[in-house]
Image 1: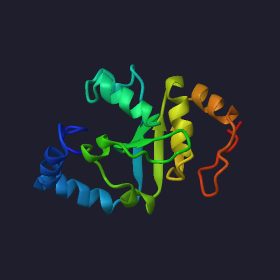
Image 2: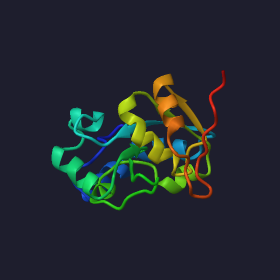
Image 3: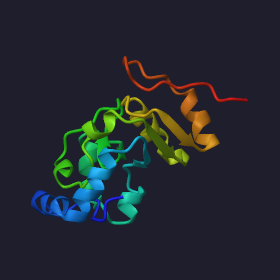
Image 4: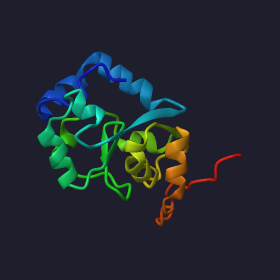
Length: 159
């Protein structure tokens, strides 16, 4: 967790926040991690980032118009698991995707409202493990598996 706002007011503000000694040290430690654990966010009007006013209603509409459906580690994902290009990327305080690609990542997900977001992020190929509630897991398993090579795969639940 970075000790700064999730989204800065401007790209210049983000640069100032990211240059702070405590933030730089936190990022250095994060880049050296052996395991990443990330929570999943969906990008709708009732999402946590909206309800806690981290993103405005206009931000959410703009991200959705650009194809955004999920956020993880401060990055916005489309339905196919791709990271979308959006001006919010210039204002979000987060590790670069390149910093997490080489380290195992466990995704935390709970709630049926996150079903589409979970499916999208699993398609990114970044996720190596999943901690999820049973109802969402069953619904996720019923979806069509990712078609792209190298993407995350789903396994049948243990009985």
